[in-house]
Length: 223
Length: 314
Image (cartoon, rainbow over all chains, first blue to last red; front, top):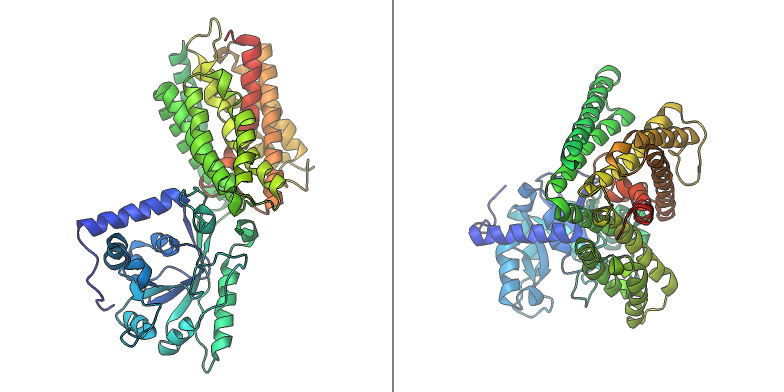
């Protein structure tokens, strides 16, 4: 595993990490279910459903420490650079790969940024819906980013991860979280097939994520 | 008089657990050495969890009333989160849920600690039952309103109100039994949990006819009669812990054990409706906290009120 970014270190970073993980665990009693694969340090793309800003914190907090150290979330630059606090957490604690949502001439190609992070030895956390899902639909259609990334790095497994119940802990627009139990389920990995079309891959990846959701999940649906 | 009796009890419980652990070890050794065996492994996980639960109880007892109240407040919190996690609430219930966790739960236990029977006996069935629909109405979400309000209220009733009657036993003022209320709690818990364990054991050994096949495959008439019968005898034999005569202790134990059985049955019905086997995964071998305390929840208020009515002066 090569050495990607300035490895997280220092008392403040460690303390923040511990505090965030502890907060996530206490608030949600979160449990990891490795259903379709085992936790290994192979480079992977974890792709998950997106209902809350806390999604990747929760996913990240259930990873065993050795995996957590090499796993970087992909997040929106405008949101995570908006305040000093967020910026610190995104850049120093999570070492997020920050993506500009509005493209201009100077903004680097997001797919290239992610591919570079993978080449640097990191695993990624992606939300292929592209935006937080606040509607009645269980899972929004996927944006094409995950396909274009898989095209560049076809050897890397994409692991579907279903984050259950977090939308009920803190629905969009609410301030007080309700301490319901959350689960994070890791499903069976998918890889881009030889010559597989964009839409076919996106549909397959989306179906794999839906198949990862717990069966009594209908009860958990918010809205 | 409380202290030596409590020590004798603790010794007795530890002796029983030690015997159970030994039996579990021998079963594992003789029947399924090195191989997984669903029933034996589950049995051993349960016994191990019992050690932890008994140790937790004893530690709470060492801290007196505050310790017991805090222990059950924590149990209520975990049970309520298990219940609400499996309840299909909607976004419009968010404040009602927040109020349940952060207002009514702490208030109920604070009032039990402060010995305010006049208010803790009505806080949830009156005040919460009026406040929660109002809070939910404010959110102006009408879809399945009645159903949602009822579910949140009942979760609060079972997980917080009913369970808080266990530490509330410490508030009873029984002439000639001063300082012994911890033993009364122990009596309740031992009879309820012994009934559960004995129902499980009798069911596994002799179970043939199911009581309610649609609700729970593990509840059999043989288990029910054997478990409740033996727990009743055990309760009668423990009369010296209580302010009761042996006959009254026997009757109380029978009532507790039967209510406990019905508690398990009702909670199974809810789980069946939700399509799950267990309420949670917190206690290895047992499932969630709610799986372990469902019978206690139904027995506690009845035991509390009967004792209060017939024996207490407050």
